[in-house]
Length: 608
Ligand code: G6P
Image (cartoon, rainbow, N blue to C red):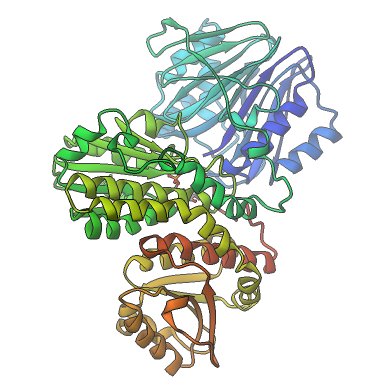
């Protein structure tokens, strides 16, 4: 999972490539590189961030009218200069995002033909294969097409040839790649954010497409080699949406954008008196009325949104709901229920495991498929008949925040639609719930005001090596999300437990060095949770409680309490998420970590 950018222009494209890579760093940031043609192929690579590559490009006075560039998240081979892209073979340079599953067999074959490998990556085979095809007499496009036909796995590639300095060739299969159409210049990139600096006119390539790009022309051919026209979309993404504005970090910006992101996601229901199933796409009414259960498939934070939804769907809509981690589901032999609605949840819509899980569900005969996703043009949305687009705007911070709360918002709407179709909620109740949804952005703004209080707790967590997060019922997955956030960006080992399970194991861990976060909404389980909190206090554990006003929990020695200003009934899990995000953010800041780019992680996991 990496980011690629390419450019062909009459001007020096090095600054464009560097800016593009900077925007794509969310896809990977352990090494970077670029190749340009300037009287010959020139390649620079460095371990570390794009800023290191930019410094190198400056020192070397790198210049050129045509170039390709890459920011990497290591899969095959350590993050080092030798494994950074572009990979070269003779006068060929290639950048690659994806995974070549049959690289070992190709590598062995190429070595026996005399090719020498200088990296441990799967990607290097692509450069040598193209080189071999050129030796065979193919032109560059023909060589790329012949090469990709041998590859198994997923790829977006961009290729340069030093003896053909006016042409770049790109191809994609299974991972995103788009072209940017400029005035007298053309571009390619993994996503639109990399190209907003130069154009808004984007062409989304489809699987199997190969494109030849020059200053003047773009020639695209499909998987069968047939020339095709692909529509030009004018990107609505604003440059502001991918900039930091007044914030220090994208995660901070995205936490504070949540009221607006949720309001945008709710836009279609803001003035509605009642909910229509068609919110989920044309024909949704017929599909949703046929389903007898729900199967949710997702990864990471999106999986946690699914676990929350299970509580809503079963309690309010009254139909069974299963939630599975996509990377597990894809390799099980599940017993399919053809009447289940398969719901995939994904911020990016490009997560390889989620896409593969959806494929498996499809192959098992699941006909009813809904994607809840933040990226309209993503593979997941394209592969699903029903869809709901969360309107969080671009999420850049690796730790997901506004995507999560907008996913939860979408899942409440889904629950209510399912409940309504089954006669499980009265018109009055529907109206009251819609009213609560409309109040949600304001309620989120109120909760954000707890930041200074949470900040005071953060120092304690930053000093600790471990933390425990407790919740009960629908707030248990919120505890899971709180623990995940803390792990991801502060590197504090955090575990979430349903509080009732404490006595079956994790209580053994509790002592004065273990801060324990308790999510304490004023719901039916609050008295049970209070007993669990006593179990922690009795062992000297220090409690950090996020309580609703009506939970009636007073601070005392070893018991720190932050009261949330709004009580949101069924929407309570959404509100309780905010302080947990803030806690992770501030703990990571205290530890001096790179909040937006935590070590070893990446935003879009487009590989297995
Ligand atoms: C990565 C990200 C997480 C995200 C997960 C699923 O691990 O770092 O923040 O939750 O992928 O991504 P998706 O785009 O499918 O929601």
